[in-house]
Image 1 (cartoon, rainbow, N blue to C red):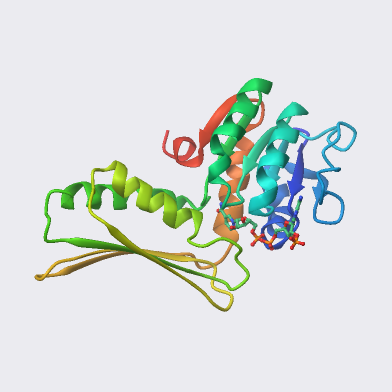
Image 2: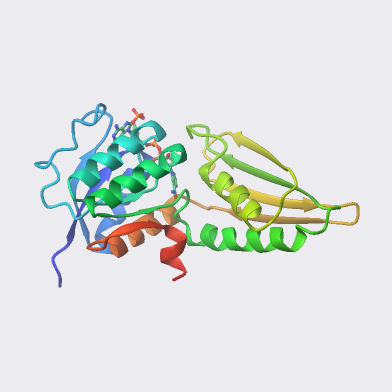
Length: 233
Ligand SMILES: NC(=O)c1ccc[n+]([C@@H]2O[C@H](COP(=O)([O-])OP(=O)(O)OC[C@H]3O[C@@H](n4cnc5c(N)ncnc54)[C@H](OP(=O)(O)O)[C@@H]3O)[C@@H](O)[C@H]2O)c1
């Protein structure tokens, strides 16, 4: 059996703990865990800590992603970014990965089903773009501890609709309540009918498995990728 690869878990919250449990199934050994206690000011991003780490997986908080990504790329380590709410820094993170010749995969949603859903929604938007009687909405609900709203996934769905040519306004709403792992809904409505497209996550496990699949794929590679490019290549 091949030696397990070294994994750094950055952000040891709900997702980080799940990734830790599932990592051995994907051929990873957890070599390092960084959290708010040992990395609040990014002091955990040292060559010594990252010795033996092949891939780092960031499920931390929106405000930490850019500095984590820049520090990890500078250490020559590949990265998977699962945290959301950092897209204002996308170009800076991409530049850091390219400058250091490392690899990274990011996605606001590592569920395979949601990545298929992005494409289904884009196709519906493309078909209805030229039918002005149809208005559109975008809605999501998540657990009450989620820090960003609207979710990164909802923003991506709206962006895909626009890219597909849907130029009219898209009314967007978010709810935060209970322990819900995430539902996203896109709808089109006219005087004649309603189309509702909905993805419902049953648990966080699909996100963790997708992120670990991305970590397996990026190990030893260079370049900056979005997960949908990896899943549907
Ligand atoms: N892409 C996907 O498929 C997907 C799926 C689920 C969730 N997410 C995203 O992943 C992120 C984590 O979700 P979660 O539910 O696991 O949240 P969570 O339970 O709040 O976990 C985040 C953890 O990161 C810690 N942290 C804060 N600053 C840090 C730093 N500088 N370095 C390392 N860790 C730090 C937090 O500590 P404090 O609590 O003290 O701040 C917390 O323990 C969120 O952005 C969420 O939206 C993405």
